Image (cartoon, rainbow, N blue to C red; front, side):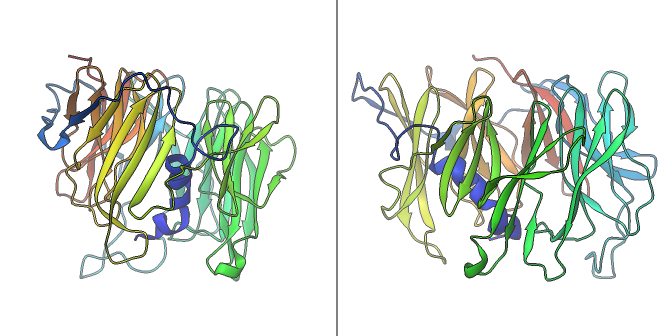
Length: 399
């Protein structure tokens, strides 16, 4: 299992194994029929780029002599990204040592094809930008001089899109490398939320906190939830974990509820469940693999609130890292299911539960982010070279 999954995998686990409700177990759907339909995603036709998938923008791979990498959308449709000089490789082709080039956060306007570099100041040492998120008013990012995801030294910065001012919101360093964090970064309204937690000994894992800080830096960061970590947003709610249990905090009222857990979570072969406004999902496989809790032949079932149930035969995947279907969520008019390839690409499958139509994004493609309206997606394409081709595509209509 890769380091990112080791450190931040519980963010995904929280979303797929628990969800918002007032009880500790997933409520059962109101069943009006016991009919179970089957879909075989292995038979899904692959959507062709430029034909089935209309290209809205073919994104530049560089800004001058710097490599460009795009991460997501702002609510008004601009793209968030970073630029940095290419890393020099040693004789065996592997990057060695520390960072050699400074990474800068950028905004990219698809219509004008113009970059805005948000912060060009000199740093004491080169830093990378693992996370960047944006609203209509601010862009917030994390910087760290470390080369791995679990960063014990990091700082958070905010860019005011109106005044063009950059403000440091928070910084932390733990010379012992015990306290890490800052990668689970979200912005709701005018407030930034993130967590720090102890890694990676079992005895340290209760030492954690969720922080909040105004996006304009008008006051210092403060502890919002003692013991919390792995923050995500779900509508107007902030989700997080405390000692393995999931919670949801309504950001409007402050009311906090415990997220329910599937009653089948302790069964052998369980590989995830979640509840949305429209359906429940359940992933069950067979115990297997090299590590405890791993499953083989995972099967996804979606039960809609009407009671209609759809069972999927195994999705095609070659991933040993994350072989189970996950991140079941609306993608425009479709229901999207993600499968992670062995190279790390998050390939998306589109399902129409009414017609049982299923389509697949190209192999070796990573479905990175949806825009605010759910009409466009940022997709990275691996063509077997050092660089990924990145495009913005229009979500296809139902057919």
